[in-house]
Length: 164
Image (cartoon, rainbow, N blue to C red):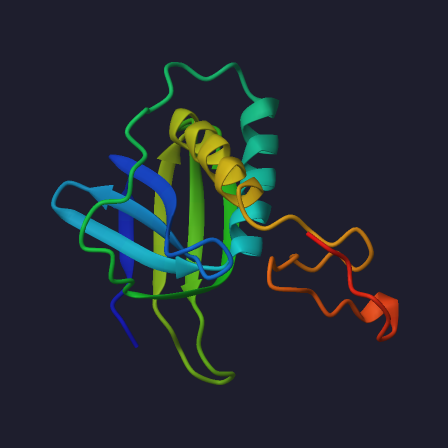
């Protein structure tokens, strides 16, 4: 088990390393000298962006969005993300994310409490959506990512696979 974190974000972003189709998504949060980098799945990034955008849209228009969203070094993740909980603290006008480490059933993992502004959340949503949509296009039949080398689509029942 890793240590837990309670960070009020100076920076909050998402990015990738690697080639499209083999990318690793990373979630980063910085408070002062503490940088937390977590491995996160593409689907988790997409769902976070969708949920956070709903929170941001339900409030007053955010102010100036952060522009520096590049990942910081080192890129070595502390742990992989399991579950994510999100809430909006209306009194402080902040979004709170509870991110739990992915562990085997019955084990205890690390927990990170990340507090971000609506502006940071809005910038995250834009960055996340751009990254998710820049991946391989989905197969029109099964929804799985199309691979330029070929795609064995289960919906074609062994017949000619879709071409990219």
